[in-house]
Amino acid sequence: MQFNKTGPAPTIAASNNTSIYESANILKYGGLIAFPTDTVYGVGALYANTDAVRRLYNVKSRAHNKAIPILIEKLSDVWSLSTKVSQSAQNLAKAFWPGPLSLVVYKSASVPTIVAPGSTVALRSPDHSWLLELLNQVGPLAVSSANKSGEPHAISYTEVQTSLGNKIDLIVSGKTLRPSLPSTVVDCSVDPPKVLREGPISALSIRTAI
Image (cartoon, one colour):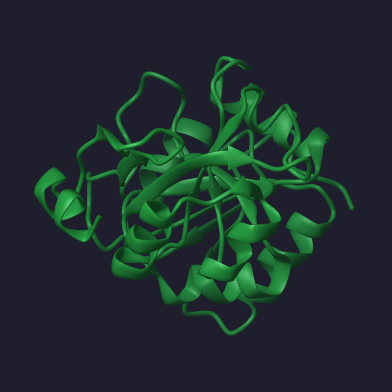
């Protein structure tokens, strides 16, 4: 399969019956796609495809020492990506997944170093029906916000076109559910867990769920 090298990436509506198939096909062949999530627009690749993830870093001009979060379909997917999932992490996942909460946990050997160069990885199950169906079809995705590093988060497909449109292979147009609010991030590799970024879910709600 030939990927986009020059010119704008094609766009397909999430409501199109073939959008999941076309997105999955591009991902399985090592491509990059951008799509709406329940927070902001994301751009992603299959997490285990190191060449695709390396390209994701380059497209975003992202420092390679900054880990890329992994989106998963459901809580049970955590066990193949982490060596240790604390009770606090499980409580938070049960309370807020699918939803705008990223949990930092110790990574397993299945997570490539290029995705997470340190000992931990951030995992999230998004509350977005189209994206959950895609994850069901292709498995976990390494996903970052669909903008060049340092730029504002994209909340529409036109903003993605402006920022990354000439460097990725497909843009899925649709609505984000919580415009301009990236997920709350909680480090569950420490005890007690620490809120690293407060987003749609408040620090108080996190403490209560724990």
